[in-house]
Image (cartoon, rainbow, N blue to C red):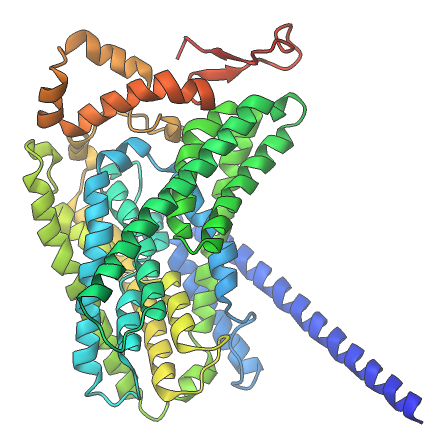
Length: 547
């Protein structure tokens, strides 16, 4: 009797498990089909003046959420449960790495001080304004019991711009200066926001004093430097391994695999060491594109270029599709259904604080940046400042992930105040992505009708699909030869004082050619062709003097 009962219980559990597995398979199938639909619809709307693939994925996600709500009787709206691990461990790394791998490095590092000024100092200013504004307004809006840590977390959550959506709205070839500033700021901004968010959760905020503030600043500086060095180390290690072992002699698959795995390893090591994984994998991508990518065979170059871009593209679509579906999660909206005005009020206040917080640092810091640039062509004009301000107003998956981390437990919440903050975050993300995202393209075309006038602000560089092969900080060696033949170089001290950017470029170039490339390879070093008489020679690398 007891044996029959136990057997029945086991069979019942197996049946439940089988049903659960089946439902998971169905959900994954539907989600993959929706991803395909997003790609197809996005392709059909490629020439649209208003739409981009982020908004397309959001719209399809919202429509899918409505359909699921109707079929489930109003009980559910999404196919998958939101997971912070899914976002931070699987979806974000390929996006940030590919951005670093394909970014125009010369533009990024030429504007590095301005980017750091916007991304670090600007985020701190925005964080302060949003946190203080939330404390001032929300205490009078009856949204539940929120502590000082929650208000500071709100500041960190809504300081994180959506660099994913911005990358799709701006074009690196049409507006290279704006792209490098907005994207570079976005990467540093995301890293700063995550660091601030973690600091808010880890520090004792019951008594905030000058010592705590200094600890926060010191912790940020340590994380920034350590994360950057870890990314550079991982990139150089991959370049050294591939250069010395020359995997392509036997299999290009191994070259591609080691590049992908080393990049992902740098991200996970940063997570393991409690560093900023975003900064680590971004700089790993930059170093890999400068050294490692040039050490592999031509077929591996083509493969890695398209593999990284494809993984990034799918991750971006996945994120916005899910955000669209999760926006209609009935569980969270049920808590605020009795007071929709409060939720709308909180969302409006947050949008106002985002607008004010961004304006509070873009225009003043642009003014300070312009003071350091003597040439009018290198200064950020007012129209460009407005574009930078507007393009960074969008909030996306980073804000969603941080909000879920702060105000939910495993994607669920039972407190009214937390539910209001989650629904308000969803509202802000949807509104900013759709409205601000839709208007960004027309705004750029109106303020900057012809990108040709931007050419004077940058040195000439290739705008071909292989433009990311330009060496770090400087164009190819022939550029230096051309310049050297027509321009008399001033003394080192005079050059450093009058043109610090070009001076750093010059000395980096000399150091790179003399010490880095002989060890780690890179542009100018090409492997011998497998099967050639020289393949068995101890020195498997030679200098390509034609470049």
